[in-house]
Image 1 (cartoon, rainbow, N blue to C red):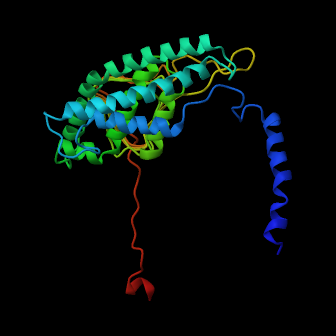
Image 2 (image 1 turned 60 degrees about the vertical axis):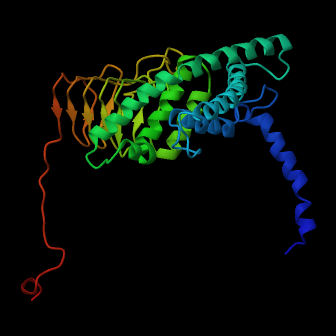
Image 3 (image 1 turned 30 degrees about the vertical axis):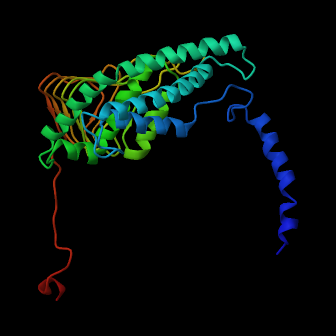
Length: 316
């Protein structure tokens, strides 16, 4: 076994090879550009936003009407500063700015970030109203649920929906990167993958939730209920004459009001519409629209049952 100092003597050459690979790697590094949003700061912002959305459930005990203003005011002030920095960095990245961008450009970008942050924070009361409907939908839709508090504390579906609602607001404000970073964090936490570009109506309920995928151009109406493993995805990815993917097209389904989609159903295609009041059964695969009030199920398979252990008569 080599002494440690002899073993570590190889590290400079290893470092040189690693650094040289950056010039060869091209798209897998972010050097000589303005700083990117920090993932840890995005996560911290999510946690602060959740404290604002659901006061008394997250960190601070003994909140009441007389002191909640002080508590939330401090969070909003701190959150504003954090979001301005995050948004500025994301906007710079979206514009392809380098580290040498002029002070004038940086000033204009910071001003845009400040305005976008204010516009986002001004939407928080409306987002809270929408989330209250989502909590109600979970309570109404799950007979095992005992209270709204249980939904807020325990339901991964609400966690994913909460982050989605916040990310969607930033997405509509055309903030690059950050909305997707938010929903991918929620994806890792819950197993539920909702693209921030999806449009989702009121009273949205995800039951269990693990494995759900909702694509970026999906449209969901009010009182939609999804179970675990549901995919609202794209049929294919058409290419242009140059062989490049055609982007900014409707690739994912539309689900109208009062639709229930059971576990592991897969619905694909931008032209696919699930009519209101429909029920899509477990493991169904759909690439065509269904009219309102339709129930789609897989024909019941034949089941064969036999004893796992032979009886004494069979054994003899």
